[in-house]
Amino acid sequence: MSMLDLNTFNELKESAGADYIGELIDAFLDDAPNLFTQMKTALANKDAESFRRAAHSMKSNAATFGAMELSMLAKELEASGRENNLEIGNRLEIMEETFRQVESKLLALK
Amino acid sequence: MVTSLEPARLLVIDDNKVNRMVLSRNLEQQGHIVETAENGKEGLEKIRTQSFDLVLLDIEMPEMDGFQVLEACLNDISLRQIPIIMTSAMEELDAVVKCVELGAEDYLTKPVNPILLRARVNASLEKKRLRDEQRKLFRTFATKEVAEELLRTGFSLGGKHITGTVMFSDIRSFTTIVESQQPADTIELLNGYFGLMFEAINGNGGTVNQMVGDGLMAVFGAPIFHEDHCECAVRAALAMLEQLKVFNAQQFEKGKQQIKIGIGIASGEMIAGYIGTQNRATYTCIGDTVNLASRIENHTKVALRPLLIDLYTRKGLSDSYKFEDLGPILFKGKQQVVNIFSVTK
Image (cartoon, rainbow over all chains, first blue to last red; front, side, top):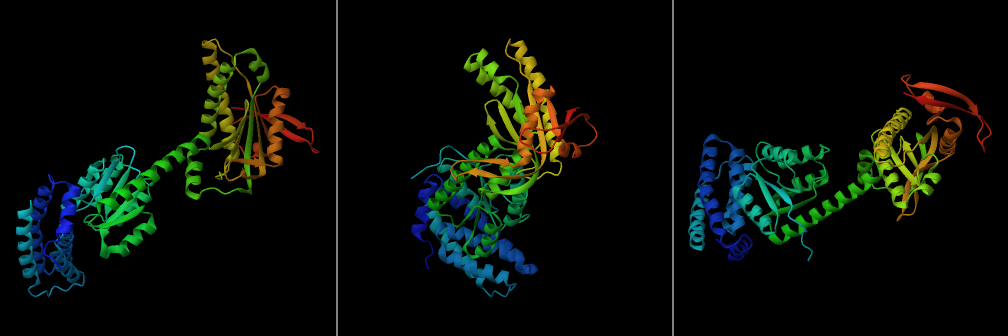
């Protein structure tokens, strides 16, 4: 599973336009910290539904850019949330770390 | 590859900003005009207040989810014909199936492939365009309810027994009129006249079956049954006579031919259906009641009254009209006499 699938990314860049891809990347990177905050808050409040929704958004956005590994991690967290299981160990930290790697790759491609 | 003909107005409803941006961008590149909404409630508001050719609807959203928006649109007769394409993640296919069963036009999984997007959007827009054309065509031959009913059920040849009211109407001394003026004037006269007659008939729940020369035949209570088909027919007839006064006044001002008409109405059982072939058919009615109505209409020349009805129709009316009993008449080809009444407001 790749950190950033360039096929997917380039297809996105081509269809959205090289002049627009920067804005798309910004939208993703600006929103991501909010999603993480939402997930942490949800964990603290034992709010599985909020947690699930934020993971769902992350899964969707990651997949849009070709960040397949990040998307997969988010998908697992979404499933946990759906099953009302918030015992996720350190999976949120792992996802954050993965996100940081994706972020630097995207910034380089802007 | 067939491309869409002209820019369509599309609405993208999705709570995820990146999704909104990507979809909008793709659709704008494909030549459409795109609006967005962040949740179901905002989306539905926009659908109601603005005009869209197609909606792309995310399933999972706060405030009001895609399924609820879809339901609201399908339950609203003014929104029902807008094609809706659901967008969703692969894992939500169960929800997608529910939506398609409910009546969503199509679906796309996210992240959306731009080529699939173009294909599905264009297919839906084309279908809508054809449906709109069909609707327009039907409306030229039928009332709004009939048109919607036909669109909904399609139509099949074959007849069924119904109870309804049929009306025949003719222009008096039409042959003489035709001979006395230019063909172009005759056509203009007919079109002006028919326009008004259609309005009166359609406006009172009737369907015009046929126009033959200067004559028309209309039916009330079919294809969609109305309990008060007698009342509707008589109301339509009186409206036609009113319209005629206006028409004649206009003709007089233009120095053109004025006309008189005769209307005959009969009610009862008849066979209604599409007669013809799959390629060419008319919705029409046959039977004794129909023949009677035609004879009654003809009798207006003799009785010198513009509107005559039979007993069955008379019985189906409230007392708010003035009736003149013209007594029993024996029509050619009938064994029994028939009671005929003249009606005025």
